[in-house]
Image (cartoon, rainbow, N blue to C red; front, side, top):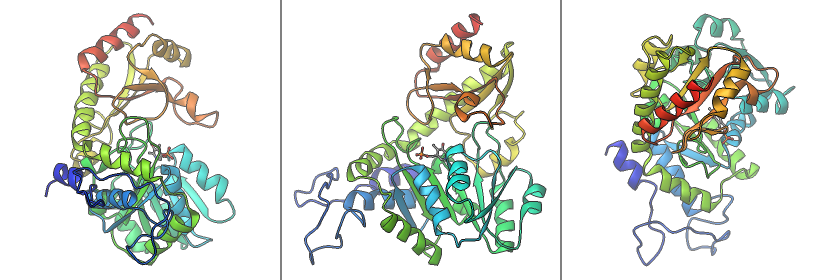
Length: 368
Ligand SMILES: *Cc1c(COP(=O)(O)O)cnc(C)c1O
């Protein structure tokens, strides 16, 4: 079956004798002994099982594990690694997971942050005890593109794991497991949820190996699991994921093209543009370029803030992946150590009609 069909049917299992069309929410935390496969909701529950099943199928993996946030999912990988491991990770890694590594695993693992789109840098950073390569592509907020196939060759030669944060691309546009990655990570808070009202995360494995057993142990014993309610809402949202992503990408391309010829714009970052340095690699591993567009306005941080203050349709808020367009000056969110240019504005392009979004952008540009 095709993606759209799987997304609608694989996260919807009948668990009620009345045979409803939509799977009910099983709120019970406990289950009668000896009658089914469920015991206690931290270990498993019907809604989580459906969610893990649909995410695994869509990412072309053998199994998935759902977590209470994307950060909990990513952190589970660092928890499952043997202490003393060396990790090669992106220098522009999602800041929450960068913080997880540096604040929670300092003294446990060693980490080198490098430009993962530069293969020579990745090779140079590799050590005998390198056990994990972490890739995030396209990256946040510069939309840098990393060649997953090339990094997977390095990882295989090193007998190390390759994990790809696939939050920006989603399985609609990119399947890292088919490109050589061992595991995929998601913040389900973003496009999977799609409506800015659920926090969640997931890991998907290519095969159920020993490392995956450790991940499942971290999930069950660590207990950073999503509620049955959150799992229900995620299954519901994933049913429309393919169609939402097509809309996000179409709108993002329209906005990127508009911005790239605007006289008040210094630079646009969108992998769908031929001028983007990662365009060719992206075209070789993605079937669409996603819904995030960043641009640098001509001028300083203050000019960028002014521009944002004149927008009416775009909410000045962090996060991404919802049906509503969000905008923010990224450096202000990332704090004082950020390498993000101060005039960089990130847009999570929503599903409003682009005539309305372009009119709003035009109006704000006319005020600065
Ligand atoms: C948001 C995000 C995360 C973290 O997910 P949470 O659900 O906020 O914990 C990780 N990686 C990327 C690329 C993200 O955008």
